[in-house]
Image (cartoon, rainbow over all chains, first blue to last red; front, side, top):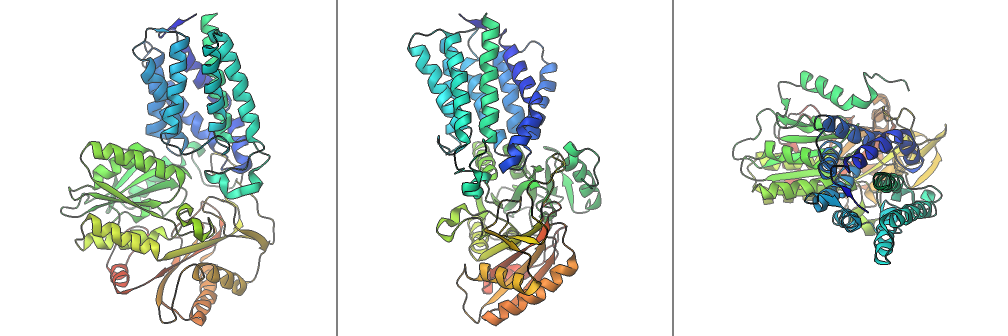
Length: 213
Length: 332
């Protein structure tokens, strides 16, 4: 069960579509305890990547992920630019020399995405951030593969974990970032960064399942 | 939303066009990066380079403090969102004359992340960058966790002092020390009377009931320490003055500098009448007001509200504060 790096470019295109389609949803979630601009900034960065990719129809998945990374880091800024920029850069760097992407490479991509975010953010699970989705989801995927599950089963389990992680942020009090000023008042709302991370991981899983089946 | 806009997603880009047109004698857009504005004469030979940066929507901050004996370059972010690491990095390059760069910015998670990434990039190129973060907002975190406090209008003193020190020939270490001294002696607090609207969002990002006031509100609408009835100016002045003066050791014969900054939608008339009350409160506690700045120095889009900033002075800070400077945001 694998796919070529070339075929994987559809995964990048799907990610762009996912964020564009959820522009208003992400801003609405952010509006409850934040600025309400999360979807706007994310969509702006992903759309710039889409424009850039139109000029390079021969790009493979790794090259496409690198374009996404560069747009987020170079054009969007905020906290989400560097965080997601680093996430996609990690995915791109560990896959760029692989022609064939198998369950092992997918696992490496997810783990590198995780460690790249951990290297620039002090957020821990429980702080009401995207880490509450990323951490359990990546661990779940790796665990399932180690238990000899196939890639599709592992990706489906990862998506379930990402949903559980997102749900868990509703009952948390924000400990980091702008929402932390709300203290107890941040409880009861799901975190915006965790929401976009959930969308990204689920789109990632869905695309791979689609390509390989 | 009752606002003057061309395209809500491009307010920052559109503002920049007008800004450099209006202040073309002093500033220009960087050729390296369209989200960097530089002092026309930067890099100034033999002088430490000064850089600031932050989200837009706080005008005249941050770009308005680029100018003579002030900042050499500024990184410009989206509305209420940190500039990119690339923009900070390009601003460092525009400011650096070979004497190193001091990056003076407000303490927020996104800005910290992007500045630190930019410093890494600059170091790889052999450009030395050091930084100071303003953390003057007393309401943003208790005194015990002062390092978590956000920077608001107090940044103006940090820029003025750091800019003067560099202009007087201070080396990087001395400029950093002077800017840090300004930060250590500066305290601010805000009140909010009505919310603000990010143009691309189109709806206010929080609410304040009619007749109420949010004390200690942040510069992006971060919740304050308490919400209570909107009091008369003398009571507001008393609360604000106590909040900043109780947070710093001040002896009776000291002198302080004051900024009364509107947040974007507050009439100047109200800033002056509030200052009259604030000055009475300050002098009744002992210290004298050496210098005061009243107007829109660091704003929050169309928020109605005001920030009070004080800086405790000594001979060195007085000299640096009085040193001539010229920028769109401040002239001395």
